[in-house]
Length: 225
Image 1: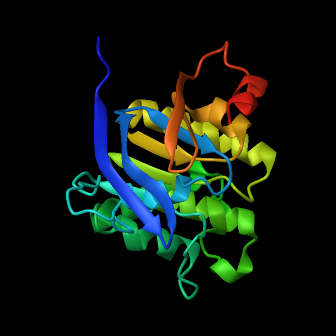
Image 2 (image 1 turned 30 degrees about the vertical axis):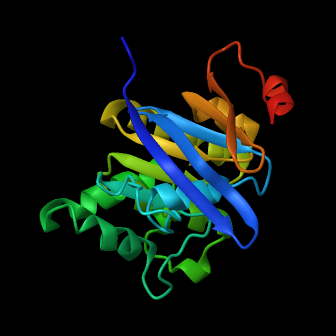
């Protein structure tokens, strides 16, 4: 059976004399984790920002993924400093859940990333890794069909990263969400992705699209970047 995709085309972006994207087109696989890897500075974050509508493509004939319910895990956590962890997450959750269930839903996503004991803490009281885990929980409490993840596990230690990835895999499988996931970490890609897109060149091209399976090795990915 043919896999369903989100087709995004006519991506064009230039900064000064630097052409990042020229008539770029990409198909993301629905209900899959689509991982984007490539050399630093090749345009991965710019691509996420364009397809999510955070920044505009240089031409008007372009449609973002905003028409779907969309969540975005940015590289920076963007937590509101005067709200507790719980309040930061409920600020998003109350848009989608009744008051009668918001407490239990909030607790569910705090436990998803293993930080239930921190819910009464303020962001300035937390390490960078814990703040990033709040960032992930806040994005997942939104019942989005598409979730954009830009280096979502940075600053999280290896043990907790692996735990969170295993739990997110269950969420993606159960809730049929599409993820578009940028990382510089090959191991993260191999742990979480269904499809791996390798970007490169200038303007940006898709150098390869790989199915993540048991035969795909870390060293082979490094050789393609």
